Length: 175
Image (cartoon, rainbow, N blue to C red; front, side):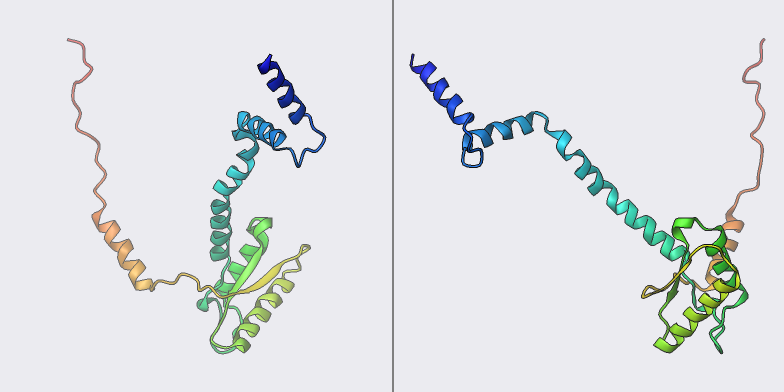
């Protein structure tokens, strides 16, 4: 009899209309959430796991679409031929979601503004039928001296073995 009374009391406590003030109802709700445990948290876990990759992709496109010092003429800060070709590639051939041209900050704000104006002028001269974006960035593009890159390429070619076919052996012949 005593156990029936306890069960009845427990049922009354759990079915109370004051859910916030009822610790038993909160306890049973927690138990139910624990039974279907991974499902409520899958989306948050997936987002937390994939967010670094999205950041890496954005940073990669920023570096890909960033102009360097050699893309501008030093005397008037206009685009060089390499700069015009890179701006053209970004605007026309690059993916639509990543058509932003990044201009690194120069030694003075005036030079930076001249460079951004040169990029905008070049883009406007292309008569594009879609919007484009030119942004200033504090990052510097990766730059390695050309003679260093050339020396790496030459050493690579020097150490490449001569192409040879393997020596023929009668491995599968019938006797």
